[in-house]
Image (cartoon, rainbow, N blue to C red; front, side, top):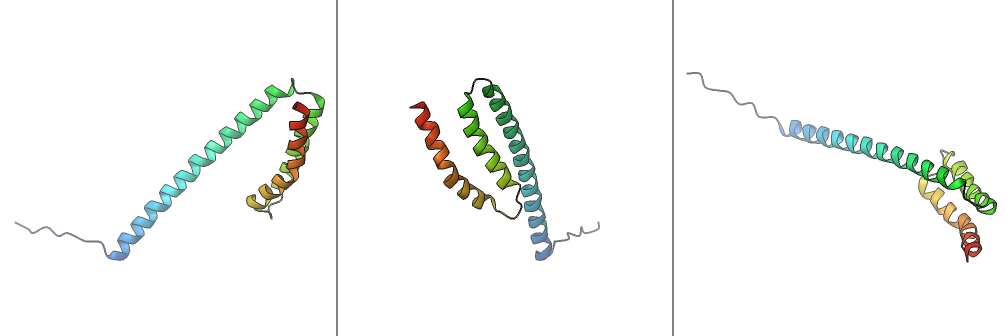
Length: 104
């Protein structure tokens, strides 16, 4: 009878395996989230297309002002999403207030 040899991985190999597993998990999670974002963007487009026909002109103008400003900011790769959101909150406040007053 031949004794079996059990090879134990070194501690460095264990860590590399754990890190590789975590990296794979994070990559898969990022892909799922990317897919969810695309799906939500498509739902947003469909929802807004359905509303455009019933929106009054002044409401369309306010919506376009916010949307075009947001898109222009997103097109600048030098700005972080946090910076863009902070700017949008400040700039959109007046437009949101105008929309609320128009309905009130």
